[in-house]
Image 1 (cartoon, rainbow, N blue to C red):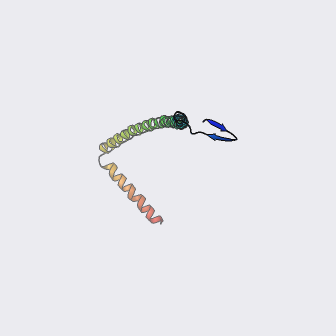
Image 2: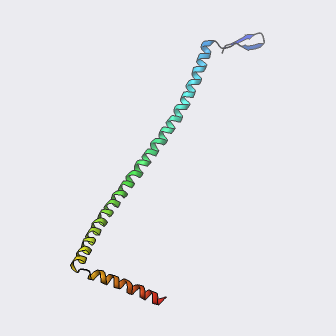
Amino acid sequence: MIKKETGTAVRRSSPTSSEADILVEKQMQRDNNTQIGVLAQNIYSIKKLSKNITSTLKDEESLMNDLEDGFGKSDTMMSKTMGKLDQLMNSSGGNVLCLTIAFTVFVLVLLWKMT
């Protein structure tokens, strides 16, 4: 801005169009710098969040692998047990089934008498 002194009064002349353009450009530059700062903070936050997600996923992947191994072992053990029970049922005929039913009835009667 240009100051013109005339006598005792000081007057400001209106800025020229090039000075106004420079002021607008400087304001736009400040606004852009502010927005760049905000974007940089957002990018940092997103990067931090993505690292946390990656870490969590790695931990959960490890747990899932352990769980899968446990289920695999349980499945194998259950298959072996079912095979042995099938052999037992086939080898002794219906004798085992009768003994199981008799034992269950005995336990139920015993519980009924106790109450």
